[in-house]
Amino acid sequence: MPEFLLIAAAVILLMVAIGLVRILRGPSDFDRMMAAQLLGTGGIAALLLLGIATGLPGSVDLALVLALLAVFVAVVFVRGLAASPDPSPRDAEVRR
Image (cartoon, rainbow, N blue to C red; front, side, top):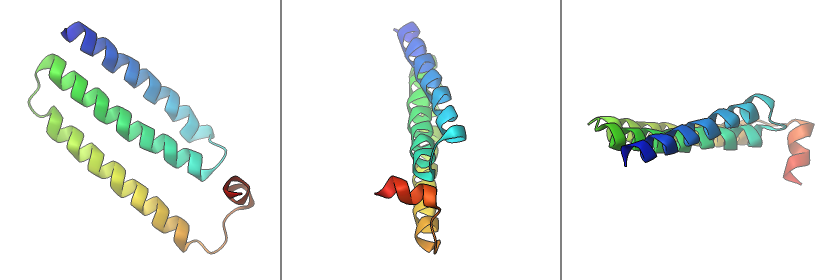
């Protein structure tokens, strides 16, 4: 059973690494934000799977901290977007 969990964690980490490409090359800020949320969710899943597979006691606490950080990043992004007076033309096309 631990081998399966480790393989599942490796697959999730691979998907998170692919999500990094979207952050670096995303066509808009919205795409980048969604990819960052994917990083947070994938990181939480990988931490929980690794913690269960290896029996590390602090992995659940670390996953909860990562979940809180992902929420704060999303809130800061939305507040920053609302505070900007003039969105870039590239972002305006995405909203339509």
